[in-house]
Image (cartoon, rainbow, N blue to C red):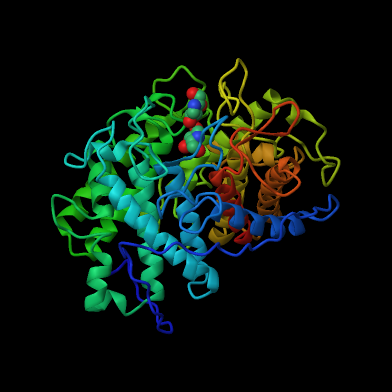
Length: 520
Ligand code: NOJ
Ligand code: NOJ
């Protein structure tokens, strides 16, 4: 019960989850008006406000039921992009779908009773039903019987298995899906307070979590998968490298931690202890990703690559619950405000600034002439060695990605929000390169000091982090198309959009960054 604290709210007629046939929704009304004329002079605030509406609308366009781009997709599918060729992204990736759906859960939780939310509940229930079905679908990664099939990274839009060769298994999917569905249970329960204690509640929760073994409920199956396979190698989130990965480990850790709490709420005490035990083992293993010689985290163990990777940012963001009120027991080793994540952001940003010609265009004038431009917001790609240009591979083919640039912004905003609410900042030797790059050289910072709001520099740190996040968002703005659409990448030389158009994840990552900005 601890997790599912009922909130007293007006009664709300719940839509029956897992209704076998969810009628197709009429087209979800456009929230933003398109096409939209963007005034290049308007402030970032104005642009963000408009772009937020466009992003929600374009994201929902790729989600069934209801989405205008996915009329032939199974209800509950989240398609990576409407692009069916050059490149073909008209599939449902477990990762992209879970990440996008967690954004929808956040929107629902913000205001469970508004008009958008009633559509969202239909989508979230359809997503849940479809994921249960996909879990049971035999596929090239394996079957449901031994859970190996849960490592399958993507399915056809109609829910049938994708059988061509691919980088599989990918072990982040079940963890991300469990995180998303646990958040949905919490949000739904909070807005339907009588559910937890009523008989109909038992039926509502059962397909999501029930203690019985072999696991047959969606979340429990995912948690069993994660708890048994987290130390086996698999493909990374970019679907290219086999090994053990920071991103995957971070989301697995969060799933197991929150899963242990959830199991306890369902009186599944043996499972709760098992998930907690595996979480502790995984947390003891995570410091292997810190490379003290390089001075940053690395994305994959024993890899020939530099290790700098947008997956480090994403692992921290998705591995850390986003509320500042999160109990310390659920805060992982490497949250966005940690020294390790911030110095990795610094190293990645420096690399990408030097690597991509569009990033060396003169930056907007700094607030004061003494300011260093050491750490300015630039376009961020997946990783330095990337050769995927959005359509195929080419030498030096990598480009900045919208979702990575937005994630860099989100790290800065979440770090700022955390530091402000903690009201203290310890300047440890490990984090010094970041703080020195963030603040003007004239600021003398002593490693070992603890800053509090009484120090003038404390407020400056928070403001500069916010400013840094906004610079990254300004890059997204600069490269979005005239109607606010976001593809996967933008060209390293021309700055124009490349790769799959209207990438669902690009919109989700943007929306999450804007939310995080709101909390600073
Ligand atoms: C598609 C994959 O999803 C992407 O991550 C990869 O870089 C390209 N194929 C090229 O292999
Ligand atoms: C390629 C990316 O590398 C991968 O992370 C993503 O899941 C797919 N595209 C679909 O968006």
